[in-house]
Length: 114
Image (cartoon, rainbow, N blue to C red):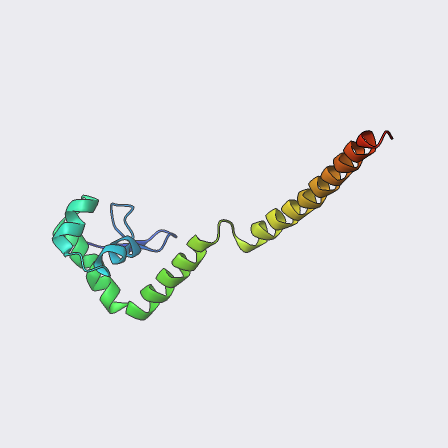
């Protein structure tokens, strides 16, 4: 069986699966044997070995992409969306602070016979 590594826009993956070489690398970098990875991901040993061979042949590119994936995973949203979320949170934080202040002032006025 000839195993191919293809790219459909999600990064290099094992043909006929949705398993990327980054998925394989996640386990391989922690020292897991290729037979363990194959069993875990329901792949053949040949498929895992093809992914490992691809990683070795394109190591700089794969590791750079993998690092970007890890960095992106730290962010809950893409930068443009995160900026909008932060702006909305700041707006509502100020709004609720104003409401709490007014409620406290109203409560103080009632306490003092106002």
